[in-house]
Length: 149
Ligand SMILES: [Cu+2]
Image (cartoon, rainbow, N blue to C red; front, side, top):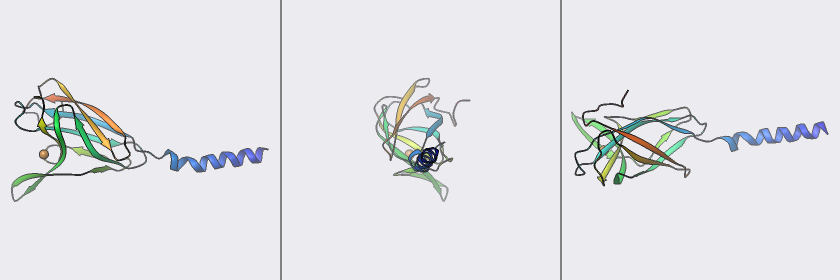
């Protein structure tokens, strides 16, 4: 009997790693800048940390403040900065991806409401495994260059 039990325990342990591997995303220091009305797109930044043991790929974004939120990457070439849409961003297990001025960012295209300093707005991050993560993003002054301390 003990032998059978031990065999069962081994079988369960052997089955665990594959089943238990999953991404776990934590969002650190999200922030947006206040907008001047809704004519120009807004922007949101944050750091994504994967504390799980499987990669996570961010594939989509929903916003309560913008009709067309997009993931963008800013690039600098010959002294001129431009940006381009990014389809997806993968966060490795144990890794972080920073969305920050001058690099990756969430562009809030087609704002449906003005981003008012002191308010927050909600973003929903959508990952390739179907999980969604809601983020409450504080709105900082237009002059902000980083998250509030
Ligand atoms: Cu952009």
